[in-house]
Length: 386
Image (cartoon, rainbow, N blue to C red; front, side):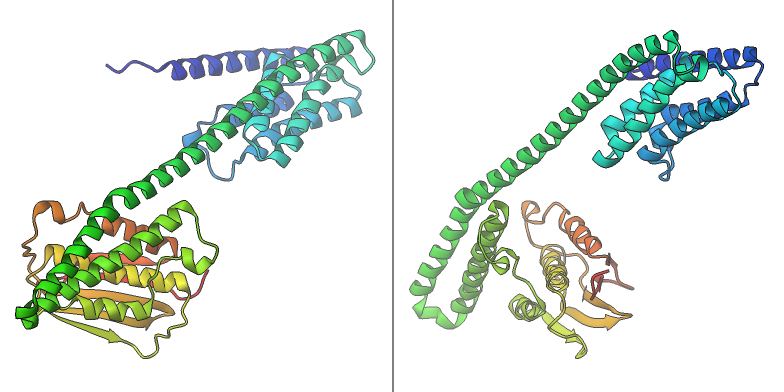
């Protein structure tokens, strides 16, 4: 049997105290002879604002609305009693509810709304004694002093916790920045070292392969080109992580519609045919983020073909307009055969990151089997910013 958490016990105890105090308020209102209806309206609004569970709270019930409406109702209750020349009682329930709403406003509302809603809750709380005793009674002055002390304590505690939340947010941001810098250092110190070694060894092998130039050199040239591109991409990644570089273009990852042609040309092997079908209506002046996303879609899809469907004989890359959006598609006729070791097949996170990139632009991504056999990756990207 799962035991209740301390937070749940405290929350349940607080709710019980508020409900008991509100019952006392209703008893006072009934004993005054004016009826419970006005007091019940104020208490129901305040209790709903305080006790409504956050997970079930509708979006329209924002912090300013929750903290301002009960205070306004309380002030209207007192103003109506003053116009009718009646003395309306108040109890601990309304006072505690207003203190809770003051705490919520100061801690959670935006700065401007925190000031407005906090002021409303403060005025409503200080007006409670005047509703019963009048503005000049000694009892009102004594209760005003007590109210000011309670308001100072509650608002001070809420402001302190708000400052702690801000410090925590700043600390999390600094931690993430430090981790980004650590990733950049790892990329530079370890991965770049090994890739550079591959590049150097490939260049040496090309120099030593003079006797079989026709057979060996094209393969080694492809390895050299891949290693060079990996180093260039790594330098750009390190620059983005370190936030270095003055020009915006230097910080942008390279990848556009023109680069897709190079991807297709560099991917083909003797046993595979890669065809690029580009609609002439697809222009080269699309927004950079759309071109970069299209490039990444093709790059990830071709990489997955090499990892998971190396038996594919025909691969088709398509670029065309569809309903005001750019459709990028990559299809293959493979059966899922691969000769790569398990460690080189990837962990399946490429499509997850690709979906996040496409969704962030307002597009859609589909990846799944084709009719019969093969696999398809298709993305629809809006050509204009929403």
